[in-house]
Length: 259
Image (cartoon, rainbow, N blue to C red; front, side, top):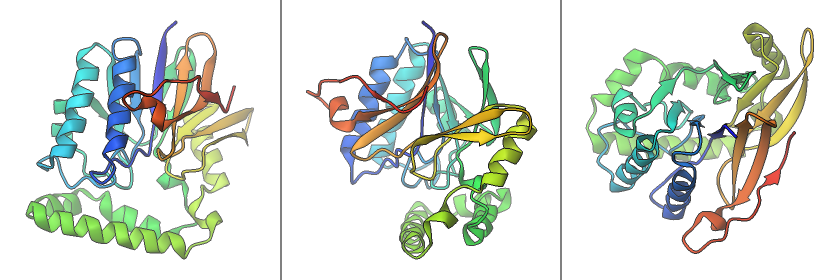
């Protein structure tokens, strides 16, 4: 059976090395078996540039390289924490970077892939910041700064983001339903897969000519999340215990959250 995996919002950070251990084991179990792995943004808690010499981040690059060397394809999408991922990172991991809003055909079932932050239009403060962070000129200016200065700036952004989240209503930080319908109708798909909101679920979406589905990946904390696309059963959202992916853990059947 042919299959592909999609994950998002791992927020890898040196302060939580077990998350990288879990990812490494996940990659090892599917290397050479999965057709492809899609990482839909926020792989890292912060990425300050492909020249970062942090050993933890180098370990992540090496883990992905082993996966791609096995023959499985590897794709990355920018999130709101790792928008500075560049071509050097893609080259070193053996992967490729996809644009936000890429449509991928999963065994006859096309799906729109996004990180999901661009769908949260009610959070106007964040959308203004996002516009700046995605500006190529701003990114080049940031990458020209010394590593230590970039690290300090990333820490400042993390603190600011935490404070903003604590002071915003839940509905402001979730997707705007009308924007979901718009992007799905514009792309001509019945399936949208994204992360960002940390609210794993499968939602029905009333489109112009059909009922579609919005597959929301969760973040990796106590549980990990993945969407599995296979040639026999289509799409399904699954959760698994992170401990099962750590050394000595016993992988139990994933809990399905969708069809």
